[in-house]
Length: 156
Image 1 (tube, rainbow, N blue to C red):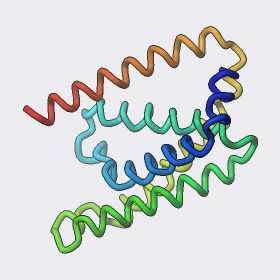
Image 2 (image 1 turned 90 degrees about the vertical axis):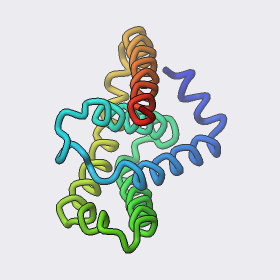
Image 3 (image 1 turned 180 degrees about the vertical axis):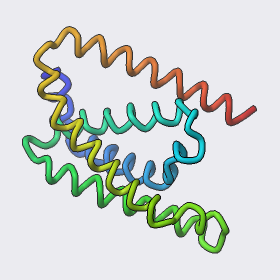
Image 4 (image 1 turned 180 degrees about the horizontal axis):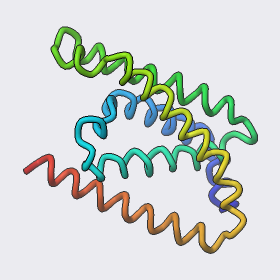
């Protein structure tokens, strides 16, 4: 795990770019939570949880003991992504359906809170390195397979 953090720190600019772009992208295309309208869409929930967990892992390598920065960066980039979504669908009926006060607050509170919580938990989990490495590998493979499954589902 320490090697992972060292790799992140060596290529800090690249990881900052990837992280911030990912957060804006997800703020644009993952908003709003579909679990409210499709509660059995587990691949969507899994994608959100795993994707933001990886972002928390990267934040753990980039920032040390800065959970407020993590929360604020995630909040800011998510809000930018939601603004992009609003502009992308400007004038469409979907904006009135998607951009309700409940959806906006839920997304802007849950996403940064989850990322911050995972950021705080990851160092505690890191104490048992063998299990962490196996877990990351399994989660990465599962995430990849779910993305392929999701793509096939969308295309068919």
